Amino acid sequence: MSILSYDHLYKFTHDILIKIGCPEFHAQIGAEVLVSADLRGVDSHGVARLSGYIRLWEKGRINTNPNIRIVHESPSTAVVDGDSGLGLVVAPYAMNVAIEKATKAGTGWVSVRNSNHYGIAGYHSMMALDHDMIGLSFTNASPLVSPTFSKERLLGTNPISVAIPADEEPPFVADMATTTAANGKLEILQRKGKEAPSGWIQDKDGNPTTTADGVKNGGALLPLGGDREHGSHKGYALGAIVDIFSAVLSGANYGPWVPPFVAFLDPDPNPVGEGIGHFFGAMRVDAFRPADEFKSHMDNWIRRFRSAEPTPGNDRVLIPGDPERELEATRKKEGIPLLQPVIEDLVDLGKRFGVKF
Image (cartoon, rainbow, N blue to C red; front, side, top):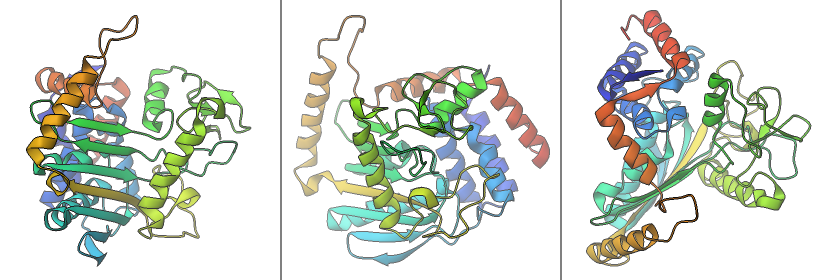
């Protein structure tokens, strides 16, 4: 394992994106979104995925200079077409549209089609915080997840993120997959040669398995809850909601038709929409009650939950967003740790494009 600075990883990512034809502003925002995942400890969605985006570009599935545009709108809603651009760039554009709509109308809702993988959901929801707004961020993803009682892979990990501002306390930031674990965490276990916990995966026959290669071998990730007895029907429902809001609403591909993130698998030859879909919301706090009053009560909410008596063996109760915020502060000072396989991948990528790692 090696430790690298945020600035080092940002510059490398930026320079690689420039090499594949991204305009300067797109390279800046794309690098910021990607490396923010490493900074917040979501290593599965950071620079470890950079080569995956490059392979999609090489296959002609990512347009590095897209014409991102609004194709339908009302005073508080819009549909954005990403023109096959990097989701890392399309998503911030769409979230800014939601924020602009909310500024004028109180709330803003944007559904996106014709995009690609957009990095961590939390980056986009948190964009609303600086505007005294609540932010929401959903995306559908490659079909790797079986609905409850099914052997078929019909849904993605389909994350949900909600960011809520507070006053003196840090914001509440929920950012979670609707599966028991995100696929990226499975990829990390594969790199480490470790097994997966029970309840993460089923094999191709629908039986529980703990091999980290279970999905590669034809199995599937499981919805949040793992099995019916532990509430997987709820995770299935949440993943379905994300899929419908992100894609059925926008005209993107949904369910099993969502294009795979891996470049060695081709998209379905008979798509039902365009690209991957996202959904964003921005809600102006003062459209409901005075912002200062709300944020003061959010402080009170956070402090009460944080002061809850912990169970044996635990020293404190966390608020959603605490672990990522604390890790971000540490990694800004001490650097970002990368596994050796990721380092080797980035070194190879740098050699191919003439960018020193």
